[in-house]
Each structure stands twice: as C-alpha cells, then as structure tokens.
Length: 266
Image (cartoon, rainbow, N blue to C red):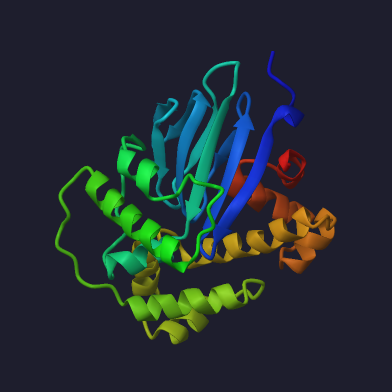
C-alpha cells in the first residue's frame, strides 16, 4: 500500500542567490512529470530514487549523484516501499554560464554519474554551511568543470553567444516577472531578431524566455504560499490569470500541486 501523501517531508536549507537547496524524505511516486529551468543536482542519502528521463528509467542509489539538465521532462519516486531520502540543489544556469564564459551549457546525457569530487569537496551537500560569495564561486567553478567533464561527447567548436544581449533580456524579465512582454519588446531589448534571441537564450540559460518568466512567477508564488498566503491571493500577486492557472504551472514545474508542496514543508 502506498504511504499517504502527508508522510512526505521537504525541508528547505540555506541557499544563496541562484542556488536553492532542500532535503526530502519521500514515498511512492512522489512527483508527476515536470520540468524546471535550473540544473537539478541531487545525492541519494538512503533508499532508491527512481525517475524517468529522456525515455529511460533510471535508479539512483545511496551515495550516487544525479544531474538533470534545465527544461528536461522527468518524474521522481521511490524505487522501494521504504521510500528514499536525498539532498538536492537547484542551480541557476546563469551562474554556470559565468564560469563557462559564453559557451553553450553542457548537457550530461547519463543523469546518474559518479561525481565524487563534487560530492566531497564542493560544499554543495553541506547544508549547515552558509554559501557566501567565496563559497558560491568555488562551488560553481567546480560544478562547471564537472558538468563539462561529464558530457558524453567531445565539445564542438562554437560561435560565442551574444551573452550580454540575452543576459539583458533575462534581467528585464527577472526584474518584473508579472509583466507579459511581447516578443517584439524583447527583440528591442536584445537588439536581436526573435529567432536568434530564442536560440541563444536557450543555449545560454537552458530554457526559453517564456518558461524563464513562468519560473520567476512561481518563485513569487512559493514565497507567498510559504508565508501562509491563500493560493488565490498568491496566484493574483504572482501575475497568473487565476488560481487554476498557477496550479497547472506549479505542477508542470515541480510535479506537485501547490497544496501538496505546502503541506510537505517542515
């Protein structure tokens, strides 16, 4: 028999600008298919974590690390009735991009890999330690090197991205995520045509401008829900059409409804 949903526990840990960390103890099929605009890098502490990613079923055992590329559809659940416990960090691709110097984000085709150096020395899993500027810089540099080393194919020659232009678009959206900018407006912001903007934004940050905006709206909604705001009010303040619209986007991004997410927080 599947344990009841309330048995799931999610504990938010100290993070920093661009890095969100949490520890969770979950049972059954914990998450429905979803995607987010960050790298999701987790380490299984106990039990077996099972998830579907790019058409295959994967299992992450205790001590193993999994890496999910931004905007890739996946689910998640326990591989056994005992459930599983893990720590995970959601890393803003813009931080990785700073360490890459304009290269397209590295894509790790095999999501369950050995990242012993990351697990042991980066401080990513030390939830008791604060992530100050120095610690974050060292962590991101280690992560960028590990991601590049873990790519399954040799890097191909690349043309430098118009990084300042797409970063400007990203900053404009992030500053006012409740505003629905038209593509013509973003073209003017970037000084690029829409096709170049769409392609280069994804190459630089791993997702599209529209999905980036939705994730920033969901950031607002989560903060409000955590503070005890009613879902309808949170949806309105985050710029969604209504509560149902927010709930659909919430589930697509996190694999949980807003109510499930809020009730699992400890």
